[in-house]
Length: 433
Image (cartoon, rainbow, N blue to C red; front, top):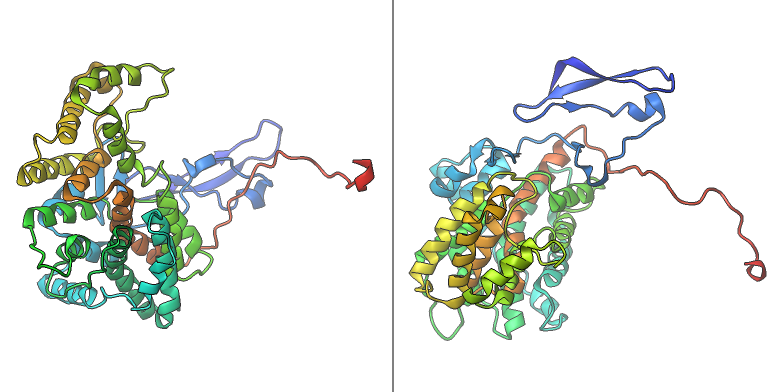
């Protein structure tokens, strides 16, 4: 952080003395005003619901420029990483700050691969859930429970133990997600295989069975790998902030990631691709699109267009273009271009990209729209979409958690409030109330 030569001066109309605050410059992005001494100097707080104008930390991991449609992991554009790197390289980059060379990559992949099995007692854990439990509730429970099995890596002040926990979480998340799926289907769990890549291993644990050998399809594995890269981190969003806030108390990393999963479960956050696919199923067929579009344009109908537009990206979502390519590749590979659901999705995409109503409001298809279609084509059930998202985002959460633990400026999170309740009053005896 570099201090700017400029200062921000806060003046008051009630005659209170004005206060100066330092301004910091990031390497890119807007300057920030350091208001840490505001309360001590004035007895006042700022009011910022949702922290939309507040930087709660400094970070060197991910940068987003919503107006430009730019997403950088450690300075590298997402467009380049999705084409020139795989998910394991992206993980290494987010964790360590640099892309690995060949030797570093092999070592990292080898270490992650050798940690993909989960403790055998986890099988009994799963049996405690109903078969129809939502996979996200299963993941919150099982990821939190990892702390019960791996006591040897819970000292957050030990960098080596933090690294072991990070590897364990990255490695075991696909196994737990696949186990959640298999359990819901009443199928036997599939153990991971050390000779397969991270994404191929996950596909086999999901869709393989003991009766026959699973055939790895490179196009589908690459599609899943790209989904993971595009969702690996997204700066200080709700779930990442939850992980940081939980971590600021000194909670163990498994508990922090479980907290992140719980937050991601919310329909306004990780549930968007689930909502997009459910919307397509509700529309039903291409013939129903015009009527649906009219309802979307009618403010009083309450019908929303899911999977279009983005809160952060004001012009286009850089991830959407990459996911769109993958979407068409997968549909072609599986011969699904004529499938009614996918035909409907492509028709809706065409209308949204050409209809003045959507174009003027920048309601272009976002990454959730395409990733929902791709996951559905891969055979992943809608209820598991957010679980795949959690699997991808685990690396981002861990990198952010690690950075926070090592940051000497980090304090336990303690947002303030504007209190609007009753002032002091006396408790009357029961017979007088």
